[in-house]
Image (tube, one colour):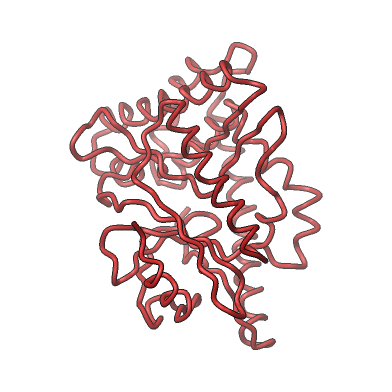
Length: 305
């Protein structure tokens, strides 16, 4: 059970630009492409994501329920998730924030860490295990469409080996629920745009948003992203054997992947995210240094690619 009082005091005293200097200090432990993952000094059990996206308590509660529904559906599909909880925090004069907490897992057990201290054979077995977990989603979708269809971001950093059972992988990237009911996307894409600089939102809306909202439903693109991120994790030697493994699991109506295609995808994706993060930092500079406004988002630090 999360402490409402702790999270209220944390939110009230948070410095999003320097979380470690907040009234209740926080330590950044990881980065997504959009938001940071952090520990709160007074809580040694959980890690958190903070979504300061909401104009009202009603909107935050809707997202909270959508998140819980998504987690329940992932578990119904056969995935293992860490223990998780949520708390909505309302501080007067601020956006309503949803905190998503997960049980803290050993840092060394995360996929992107494991592949650096396992040999190539064991690393490949770990990735094959993650691929089999992803296939559970496609099997679930085949059985439940059009009533329910799930999306998943399968990159290697989203999988964590259980310390007590090597045959169990936890899936952790649940804070942006993407799923369809009767063919209708349940996520509100405009919420996702709130983390983007205002002047860019119309460009993203026109040219990129549809791709971002649909790519994680398509097996070929989910696997493409998983493999391409081996470049980001500095393990390009694993790409060719993983391509071979993925091609064995692709639906028959989707063309096999090639290393050349994966390399091209990564170059393009890398450029997009570098530019996007750079513009978010520029937006933060203008907001805090020139307009003297509070910038709500905790931005990632430098991401090695």
